[in-house]
Length: 139
Ligand code: HEM
Image (tube, rainbow, N blue to C red; front, side):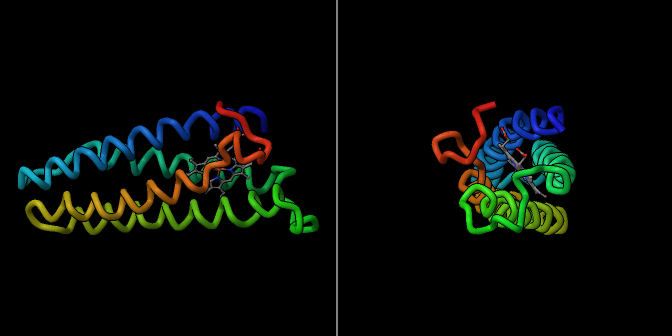
């Protein structure tokens, strides 16, 4: 359990870094009307999916997921808000990647830019940053 939380907590920075790098790469490739694909788009997708798997495992064992005390901010956050927003973000990334693969020419990059940027914003909002007092730290 502890190892899973540490992994899930640390991986957030990998996910954020890869998504930010993918968004910048997509913008730049789109502006330059580049034809080819970029590996960073797939790396960001993979990191996000690993985070999803660890998150799902935690969801079933974490004491912070508790529907009997759903009136309390902390339990509501982990039981509903965190998983709901993260799932939307991960669907956007997955769908964006699939659409980008099918797109032709520099449309590939524009598709990544839109979908990954939207997902990135949702993920930043849905992370239990320490200043939100949700019982989570920086690492
Ligand atoms: C990109 C997606 C995600 C990111 C960046 C993320 C990030 C985080 C972070 C930073 C924490 C706090 C860890 C700590 O205590 O230091 C956390 C906790 C948690 N996350 Fe996620 N998460 C993501 C997706 C998910 C998903 C999809 C689920 C469920 C299916 C999930 C379930 C949980 C649970 C249950 C906890 C509470 C663990 C505990 O302290 O007992 N997460 N998440």
